[in-house]
Image (cartoon, rainbow, N blue to C red; front, top):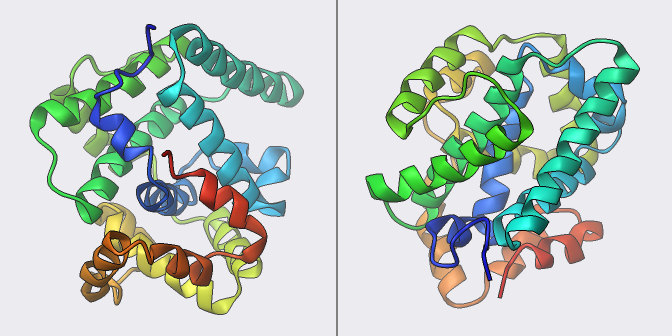
Length: 252
Protein backbone atom coordinates (compact mmCIF):
# COMPACT_ATOMS: atom_id res chain seq x y z
CA UNK A 1 0.00 0.00 0.00
CA UNK A 2 1.23 3.48 -0.88
CA UNK A 3 1.34 5.78 2.16
CA UNK A 4 1.66 9.58 2.24
CA UNK A 5 4.42 9.16 4.84
CA UNK A 6 6.77 6.18 4.57
CA UNK A 7 6.13 3.58 7.26
CA UNK A 8 9.75 3.79 8.40
CA UNK A 9 9.92 7.59 8.45
CA UNK A 10 10.92 9.37 11.65
CA UNK A 11 7.82 11.52 11.13
CA UNK A 12 5.72 8.54 12.18
CA UNK A 13 7.81 8.17 15.33
CA UNK A 14 7.29 11.84 16.14
CA UNK A 15 3.54 11.84 15.54
CA UNK A 16 2.97 8.41 17.05
CA UNK A 17 3.57 9.43 20.68
CA UNK A 18 1.43 11.65 22.86
CA UNK A 19 4.54 13.07 24.56
CA UNK A 20 5.95 14.69 21.43
CA UNK A 21 2.53 15.72 20.11
CA UNK A 22 1.67 17.56 23.32
CA UNK A 23 4.96 19.46 23.19
CA UNK A 24 4.40 20.27 19.51
CA UNK A 25 1.09 21.88 20.31
CA UNK A 26 2.31 23.54 23.49
CA UNK A 27 4.92 25.32 21.39
CA UNK A 28 2.53 26.03 18.52
CA UNK A 29 -0.06 27.44 20.95
CA UNK A 30 2.51 29.92 22.26
CA UNK A 31 3.53 31.02 18.78
CA UNK A 32 -0.04 31.11 17.44
CA UNK A 33 -0.84 33.65 20.12
CA UNK A 34 1.81 35.99 18.68
CA UNK A 35 1.06 35.57 15.00
CA UNK A 36 -0.15 38.74 13.26
CA UNK A 37 -2.90 36.68 11.63
CA UNK A 38 -4.19 35.24 14.92
CA UNK A 39 -7.43 37.21 14.44
CA UNK A 40 -8.42 34.52 11.89
CA UNK A 41 -8.42 31.97 14.70
CA UNK A 42 -10.87 34.17 16.59
CA UNK A 43 -13.26 34.75 13.67
CA UNK A 44 -15.43 31.67 14.32
CA UNK A 45 -15.09 31.99 18.10
CA UNK A 46 -14.25 28.30 18.45
CA UNK A 47 -10.64 28.73 19.53
CA UNK A 48 -11.22 30.93 22.60
CA UNK A 49 -14.33 28.92 23.51
CA UNK A 50 -12.51 25.58 23.59
CA UNK A 51 -8.74 25.85 22.96
CA UNK A 52 -8.00 22.28 24.07
CA UNK A 53 -10.80 20.86 21.95
CA UNK A 54 -9.41 22.72 18.95
CA UNK A 55 -5.99 21.25 19.70
CA UNK A 56 -7.25 17.67 19.56
CA UNK A 57 -9.28 18.46 16.43
CA UNK A 58 -6.17 19.75 14.69
CA UNK A 59 -4.17 16.73 15.87
CA UNK A 60 -6.72 14.39 14.30
CA UNK A 61 -6.17 15.96 10.87
CA UNK A 62 -2.39 15.88 11.20
CA UNK A 63 -2.38 12.24 12.25
CA UNK A 64 -4.82 11.33 9.46
CA UNK A 65 -2.21 12.67 7.04
CA UNK A 66 0.83 11.07 8.68
CA UNK A 67 -0.62 7.57 9.11
CA UNK A 68 -2.99 7.21 6.15
CA UNK A 69 -2.47 5.76 2.72
CA UNK A 70 -1.86 8.26 -0.06
CA UNK A 71 -5.42 8.95 -1.24
CA UNK A 72 -6.91 9.11 2.28
CA UNK A 73 -4.19 11.57 3.31
CA UNK A 74 -4.90 13.74 0.27
CA UNK A 75 -8.60 13.74 1.16
CA UNK A 76 -7.71 14.89 4.70
CA UNK A 77 -5.58 17.72 3.29
CA UNK A 78 -8.38 18.71 0.90
CA UNK A 79 -10.84 18.72 3.81
CA UNK A 80 -8.57 21.13 5.72
CA UNK A 81 -8.32 23.37 2.68
CA UNK A 82 -12.12 23.35 2.30
CA UNK A 83 -12.61 24.33 5.96
CA UNK A 84 -10.27 27.30 5.54
CA UNK A 85 -11.95 28.28 2.26
CA UNK A 86 -15.33 28.27 4.03
CA UNK A 87 -14.00 30.56 6.79
CA UNK A 88 -12.58 32.90 4.13
CA UNK A 89 -15.91 33.00 2.31
CA UNK A 90 -17.79 33.84 5.51
CA UNK A 91 -15.37 36.63 6.39
CA UNK A 92 -15.13 37.91 2.84
CA UNK A 93 -11.32 37.95 2.84
CA UNK A 94 -8.39 35.62 2.21
CA UNK A 95 -6.04 34.23 4.80
CA UNK A 96 -2.59 35.56 3.82
CA UNK A 97 -0.26 33.04 2.20
CA UNK A 98 2.43 33.93 4.75
CA UNK A 99 0.03 32.87 7.51
CA UNK A 100 -0.44 29.45 5.89
CA UNK A 101 3.33 29.15 5.57
CA UNK A 102 3.74 30.07 9.24
CA UNK A 103 1.49 27.21 10.30
CA UNK A 104 3.43 24.71 8.18
CA UNK A 105 6.71 26.13 9.47
CA UNK A 106 5.54 25.66 13.06
CA UNK A 107 4.65 22.03 12.43
CA UNK A 108 8.12 21.40 10.97
CA UNK A 109 9.97 23.28 13.70
CA UNK A 110 8.07 21.97 16.73
CA UNK A 111 8.10 18.40 15.40
CA UNK A 112 11.90 18.59 15.38
CA UNK A 113 12.25 20.49 18.66
CA UNK A 114 9.86 18.25 20.60
CA UNK A 115 11.41 15.00 19.42
CA UNK A 116 14.91 16.22 20.16
CA UNK A 117 13.85 17.40 23.61
CA UNK A 118 12.37 14.04 24.60
CA UNK A 119 14.25 11.52 22.49
CA UNK A 120 17.50 12.31 20.66
CA UNK A 121 19.04 14.69 18.12
CA UNK A 122 17.73 14.20 14.58
CA UNK A 123 20.07 13.76 11.64
CA UNK A 124 19.97 16.22 8.74
CA UNK A 125 18.29 13.55 6.61
CA UNK A 126 15.58 13.04 9.25
CA UNK A 127 14.97 16.78 9.49
CA UNK A 128 14.61 16.85 5.72
CA UNK A 129 11.99 14.08 6.03
CA UNK A 130 9.98 16.23 8.43
CA UNK A 131 10.24 19.22 6.10
CA UNK A 132 9.25 17.15 3.06
CA UNK A 133 6.03 15.88 4.65
CA UNK A 134 4.73 19.34 5.49
CA UNK A 135 6.03 20.80 2.23
CA UNK A 136 3.82 18.29 0.41
CA UNK A 137 0.88 19.20 2.65
CA UNK A 138 1.32 22.88 1.82
CA UNK A 139 1.81 22.18 -1.87
CA UNK A 140 -1.42 20.16 -1.98
CA UNK A 141 -3.25 23.04 -0.26
CA UNK A 142 -1.96 25.44 -2.89
CA UNK A 143 0.17 27.53 -0.52
CA UNK A 144 2.41 29.83 -2.54
CA UNK A 145 6.14 30.53 -2.29
CA UNK A 146 7.05 27.53 -0.16
CA UNK A 147 10.79 26.94 0.38
CA UNK A 148 12.10 24.15 -1.82
CA UNK A 149 14.54 22.61 0.64
CA UNK A 150 15.14 22.23 4.37
CA UNK A 151 18.06 24.65 4.14
CA UNK A 152 15.86 27.26 2.46
CA UNK A 153 13.17 26.61 5.09
CA UNK A 154 15.62 27.37 7.91
CA UNK A 155 16.35 30.79 6.44
CA UNK A 156 12.72 31.61 5.74
CA UNK A 157 11.68 30.40 9.20
CA UNK A 158 14.00 32.93 10.84
CA UNK A 159 12.67 35.69 8.60
CA UNK A 160 9.06 34.81 9.47
CA UNK A 161 9.83 34.74 13.19
CA UNK A 162 11.01 38.35 13.01
CA UNK A 163 8.41 39.67 10.55
CA UNK A 164 5.14 37.96 11.42
CA UNK A 165 5.01 37.92 15.21
CA UNK A 166 3.89 40.56 17.71
CA UNK A 167 2.54 40.66 21.26
CA UNK A 168 -1.08 41.86 20.96
CA UNK A 169 -4.36 41.85 22.84
CA UNK A 170 -5.09 38.52 21.14
CA UNK A 171 -1.92 37.14 22.71
CA UNK A 172 -3.06 38.05 26.21
CA UNK A 173 -6.60 36.81 25.62
CA UNK A 174 -5.51 33.43 24.26
CA UNK A 175 -3.27 32.79 27.25
CA UNK A 176 -6.13 33.87 29.52
CA UNK A 177 -8.38 31.27 27.84
CA UNK A 178 -5.77 28.56 28.39
CA UNK A 179 -5.59 29.52 32.05
CA UNK A 180 -9.39 29.39 32.39
CA UNK A 181 -9.65 25.98 30.75
CA UNK A 182 -6.63 24.41 32.44
CA UNK A 183 -6.70 25.91 35.91
CA UNK A 184 -3.79 27.69 37.59
CA UNK A 185 -1.54 24.67 38.19
CA UNK A 186 -1.95 23.04 34.78
CA UNK A 187 -1.59 26.44 33.10
CA UNK A 188 1.75 26.96 34.86
CA UNK A 189 2.91 23.56 33.59
CA UNK A 190 1.84 24.53 30.06
CA UNK A 191 3.87 27.75 30.16
CA UNK A 192 6.92 25.99 31.59
CA UNK A 193 6.58 23.36 28.84
CA UNK A 194 6.40 26.07 26.20
CA UNK A 195 9.65 27.54 27.51
CA UNK A 196 11.36 24.24 26.71
CA UNK A 197 10.54 24.24 22.98
CA UNK A 198 9.86 27.74 21.63
CA UNK A 199 12.51 29.62 19.61
CA UNK A 200 14.33 32.51 21.29
CA UNK A 201 12.26 35.14 19.44
CA UNK A 202 8.96 33.66 20.67
CA UNK A 203 10.22 33.46 24.25
CA UNK A 204 11.34 37.10 24.15
CA UNK A 205 7.97 38.37 22.90
CA UNK A 206 6.14 36.37 25.59
CA UNK A 207 8.50 37.47 28.36
CA UNK A 208 9.56 33.90 29.12
CA UNK A 209 12.55 33.07 31.29
CA UNK A 210 15.54 31.59 29.46
CA UNK A 211 15.34 28.36 31.48
CA UNK A 212 12.18 26.39 32.29
CA UNK A 213 11.63 25.01 35.77
CA UNK A 214 10.77 21.72 34.08
CA UNK A 215 14.16 21.27 32.43
CA UNK A 216 15.66 19.25 35.33
CA UNK A 217 12.60 16.96 35.22
CA UNK A 218 12.94 15.89 31.58
CA UNK A 219 15.24 13.01 32.54
CA UNK A 220 12.74 11.88 35.18
CA UNK A 221 9.92 12.01 32.62
CA UNK A 222 11.95 9.92 30.17
CA UNK A 223 12.50 7.37 32.94
CA UNK A 224 8.77 7.32 33.70
CA UNK A 225 8.09 6.71 30.00
CA UNK A 226 10.54 3.81 29.99
CA UNK A 227 8.78 2.34 33.03
CA UNK A 228 5.35 2.90 31.42
CA UNK A 229 4.42 5.30 34.25
CA UNK A 230 4.19 8.42 32.08
CA UNK A 231 0.40 8.00 31.88
CA UNK A 232 0.12 9.03 35.55
CA UNK A 233 1.99 12.25 34.80
CA UNK A 234 -0.24 13.07 31.82
CA UNK A 235 -3.34 12.62 33.97
CA UNK A 236 -1.92 15.14 36.42
CA UNK A 237 -1.06 17.63 33.67
CA UNK A 238 -4.20 17.49 31.52
CA UNK A 239 -7.91 17.74 32.47
CA UNK A 240 -9.58 14.34 33.08
CA UNK A 241 -12.27 14.94 30.42
CA UNK A 242 -9.58 14.61 27.73
CA UNK A 243 -8.39 11.22 29.02
CA UNK A 244 -9.59 9.26 25.99
CA UNK A 245 -8.17 11.80 23.53
CA UNK A 246 -4.78 11.64 25.23
CA UNK A 247 -4.72 7.83 25.17
CA UNK A 248 -5.60 7.90 21.47
CA UNK A 249 -2.49 9.94 20.66
CA UNK A 250 -0.20 6.98 21.32
CA UNK A 251 -0.06 4.86 18.20
CA UNK A 252 0.57 1.24 19.08
